Length: 328
Image 1 (cartoon, rainbow, N blue to C red):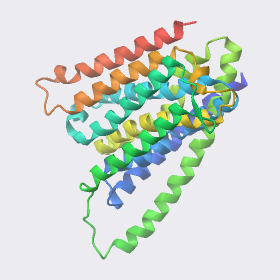
Image 2 (image 1 turned 90 degrees about the vertical axis):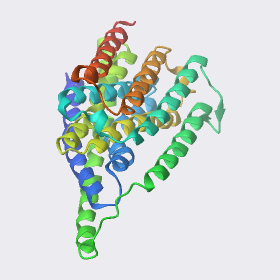
Image 3 (image 1 turned 60 degrees about the horizontal axis):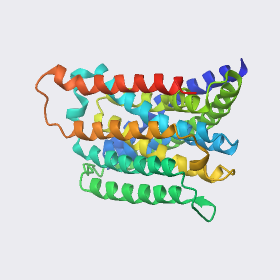
Image 4 (image 1 turned 60 degrees about the vertical axis):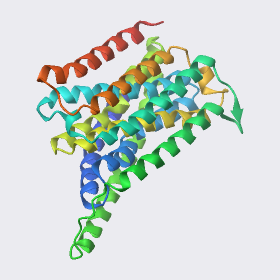
């Protein structure tokens, strides 16, 4: 009973903290010269993904590679499910038509990283450099290089409308916002550790595979902050912050796997993980590619035609959950 109670409390703390984080992130994007998309991709995405970080690292440290990998990859699918579910909820806003096409760039980077993960799991790559898997090094280098290119692309789109008179007042206000943002990020960090330990206990007590627990139960719980952040961002009509948060979170979730590899001391985490994770990575590639194609649209002929991809993605995710839960 205790693991279930701890799991539930940790999930609730993550959700409540995410509400505050998304509110402060929106204020940061308005009081700085950064676009909502850039703040979402690099700031809010990382903060709301802290549960995935602590969950994956904790699972790796206790030797459960399947919860570690399953949480990272499963969170990516859950985030995409949430994005398309929100598209149905806020169908009148047509969020994929209102956002900027710069959202394609983190999407493309995510596809590349997921392909690296997929083939690493396929070939059971155990090549190491200084005790760190070659796959992890490739992912880290690609992640850093990709974000550098994205930030350079965004430089020309930052807003510089700021009056000299209010700059000092804004600086003081911004300082308080950043401090509060950091405090709630710490709360999310702690709750993520509880989620992984409780999830591992649930897997051992119920006999359900760690892959299923990590890819669905833990992944969904640790991704609740992302879902709440997107909902709050859409409520205040900051569409680029909403989409940027989820795409940036998915990128960070892949990086988190590399950090987990460092803490996994029973060889390479990519070799220890089950091959079933290739299914999650492969579906992640397909659904992320769908986002890239959809944001390129300028218009949709009818409401049904616009919503069709969202129905398709949600159906695909439900089928994935059924399949992964039924696998031994």
